[in-house]
Length: 137
Length: 139
Image 1 (cartoon, rainbow over the protein chains, first blue to last red):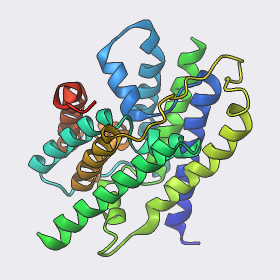
Image 2 (cartoon, each protein chain N blue to C red; image 1 turned 90 degrees about the vertical axis):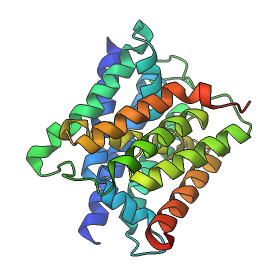
Image 3 (cartoon, each protein chain N blue to C red; image 1 turned 30 degrees about the vertical axis):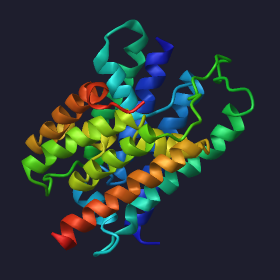
Image 4 (cartoon, one colour; image 1 turned 120 degrees about the vertical axis):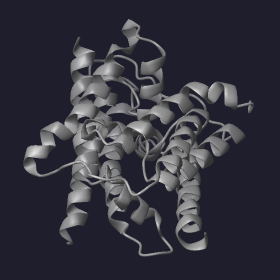
């Protein structure tokens, strides 16, 4: 097997393990957009676990860097496009109740029809967007 | 305290997974979404690997009693209806993801890299999350 495919598979299994650990120990869905939104909305005691999860998520690359798994050094997208994209991702994940993690992994992982529909929808519009930007504009 | 420790470990595993799988690299995400161009299928393996772990463990340990390993009730979404909100929200998210190659997990995992592009994305993403209830008129 191509080495990069294996790396992606192992990485995917690790993030799946993190997500199911949150369900097994706290009974919570590991939806990054939902956790982030709740965390920034209130600093109450019920949110401590969300901040702990986010600290782990943000700090993780510091642990993997010595082993050669590093963060990208550039983003091939203009600042204007990134600002608009960030807004769309923020608004869309709230209105649609989830993102790649909450719908794509945890939702499909419990065979939720809503999450399957949501994942197909955002995959479709993402592919259409890339196709339009790269090949039609 | 126990909850915070497990949440921290879960977050670390999740972030390590995103980094090791190269899901944190917007260029690779865009190449994965470029189905009609020079398609790079690598990131399909991330979802495959994630589901291969999540799905069987969920069905084995959570589905039967809907409780955690400590016997406490799980918070599982109760909504079952597929409505306009779900579709429109997911569609908007997909457009943003397709424009940038960045979704919420990788956006946050990239923060310590300190790239202005990432920090800008995270800032507008948080703004979008806060603004969402005002933007949305869908019921």
